[in-house]
Length: 463
Ligand SMILES: NC(=O)c1ccc[n+]([C@@H]2O[C@H](COP(=O)([O-])OP(=O)(O)OC[C@H]3O[C@@H](n4cnc5c(N)ncnc54)[C@H](O)[C@@H]3O)[C@@H](O)[C@H]2O)c1
Image (cartoon, rainbow, N blue to C red; front, side, top):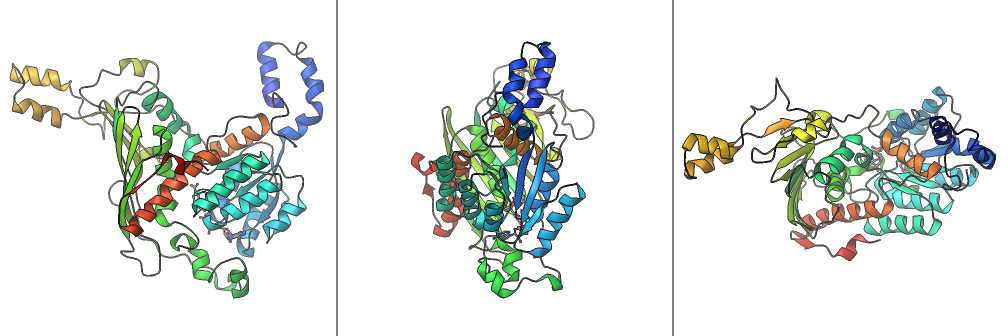
């Protein structure tokens, strides 16, 4: 397929639209016009660079999407390259394997798109090369471990006019989209959002190893920029290759802060350290505070990533407003919606399917009357000190978000990317928006290292 926007309708869209309208004959000219591109626009030729853990996850998700044909895979580690190749062959693809991405790009002019799931420090190099070779790119987060790398990616996409989607997949998750469009921004069920907290708490893990007979030679590791096998396997913990847990885990969630609020922060202050692990360079526990200047006033946000305990409720983002709160996570079991006792009732939103009725049974807090009524009835007069107590302790009612994701968590984000190539659907995470997230994340580590509060200028977020 040559250009993404060359046909006004994909073949599938055209057929279903025609059938719906009963307009097959009237629309016949589209068939002739689209005939030579329709077949191509239905099948996209794709390659994967980086067949590690996430490369495998993306392959499995992409294999569920119709008319995607993997033509090539690349990995410097034959162990993982073979895994990618075998997985695809199992599903009827016949990918050519490469150690060097440059050879892959030079050998496959038929490719429409490249998916990149290599360690963060390679994202800029691989993305820029693929864009310059005329391919659309889906690259994993964090965009890059340097602001310069991330900027180069945006600039290359702009110059080549190719699509660049970054792997912040929550932006394509229908539950997150519903929360943003129908609960937080649209309909404003939380009222004025004043605070956000977010966390990812993960138990202690061992370093990654490798099968003894699968070690890469030292010469080859050096050629590709790795000091040794330990660093190659545990790259996310080393400063040369990545940004540590804040960038690995926090990137997803702080991206949601920026996206959901529609603004970038103006200030960051953070604390963290290598408190526990002996074999890592990056902070294993870190906490950050941000100020977001929204139209309604400041939103104060905290975020913490802990890699030495799983206590305290897993991973979620918690948006708190004066009328309600949204606790949302990629894991549905950590997702809940709460209405403040003082807020208008949500009957109309239940009727419209925006929220689901209060939970009942196990885990549901007792439903309460609005605090004013409780206070007036109980006290029978004007507010006294105890009225305040009633308000402060009034339980929130818990509600559900009636939208679920019935696919692999990365599938909708890949679908959005492929739809953008085929029919011009807007990307859910462009290079420009992911750049702002990368700038935000990298500032946290900078603030920890400097031991002080740092500010952002609006121009910092523009690539
Ligand atoms: N979106 C998500 O939810 C999510 C989840 C996990 C990881 N990720 C991201 O995916 C990327 C990969 O992470 P991972 O966990 O799969 O790591 P990994 O170490 O398991 O895999 C990386 C792979 O890249 C290969 N590689 C390294 N350098 C290469 C090079 N120069 N050329 C070709 N191949 C090379 C390695 O051999 C390895 O197979 C990272 O950017 C990570 O942040 C995203």
